[in-house]
Length: 257
Image 1 (cartoon, one colour):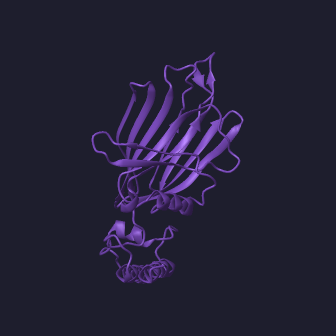
Image 2: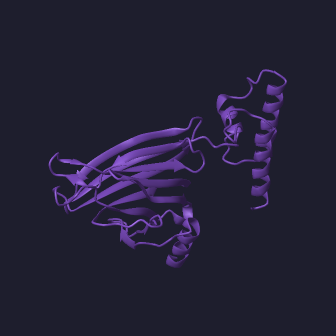
Image 3: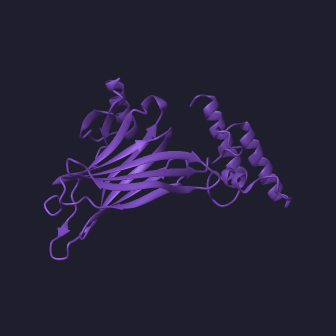
């Protein structure tokens, strides 16, 4: 099992290097959760490590996570990775290790911070961003920082996100912990009937919508959500290009490509 999971991680990320792999057991269950640390961008080095970010995928789905560090000298890309969660890999938590931010003693503020972006791979309009500060243990009454993001993917008529809950506290072992439960609502582009798959009916529906629009006929039989889903290339209109792209996806899925 371990070999298959590590091999899958290399395949998905074309990994530069697995920085660290560890595991822990959920209390009172005996169920083992594996934590895979994501690879740093090439050329990026870490100093004074005192923070981590963990991504808990609560259901099936795929996201892109990127992390930039904003410093007085400029913006530096630390991580950029795709995470795909399936039922067979739901026991994996993906993480990032981070160096502390620069603390200014005179002002009591931080001169640097991270910007985290989480984007649904199904719909790039379904995204969430957050500013993150990895506190300096030399100036804060903590030993480490941990940010936990619990991501739920949900198909919806509209793209966006919901913050279900957030919580911050210092643990008994003096670790600052920040927890965020995020729902990413995504429009399943190409899936006009929202049945969870792209098939020939979706291609035919897109052709019908395009033909009616081109002939200046009413398109009231299609909902706004269906019209958004039909515009698979997101160019603001439904035309033959969208229908052909949906048909192509259906053909590839049918062929197992």
